[in-house]
Image (cartoon, rainbow, N blue to C red; front, top):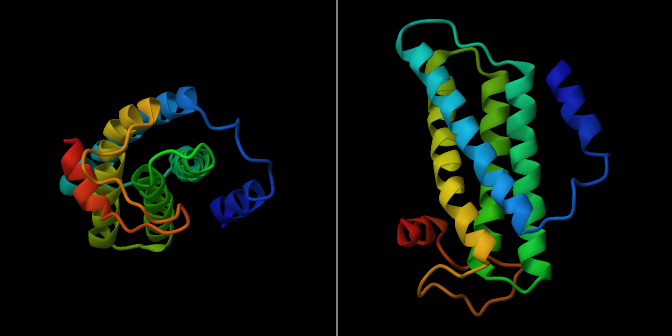
Length: 162
């Protein structure tokens, strides 16, 4: 309940610093740190240990998602590549969904699956951060649709960047 209230209160605070290439770089570094923590939590579950979801980890995942949303708006407002904005929005939504599952689930299998999905998001974010710093579209996946819609398949975009 404490995490929920904290997240609820943070919704009313002003957005973080204006998104920029520097923020994209910091976001990518944070994704690397979160990836490592997430893998450690998965390992704890695999070893039959209790997985403890700390308030700090939950807050960091929330901030990751919030920053992802900020970066999507930055890409859109700066007429950046539509596929990057779509990926940022997808990462924001996925991190929120998986955090909610982690906070509400008491069974290890759903917790482990949420951690696996978060680890995948964080690993992808490290690569996306590089593209965002360059504000370069994913090769051959430039969409001509408006920034409000995401016609590019995020999985295809991520595979192209690998």
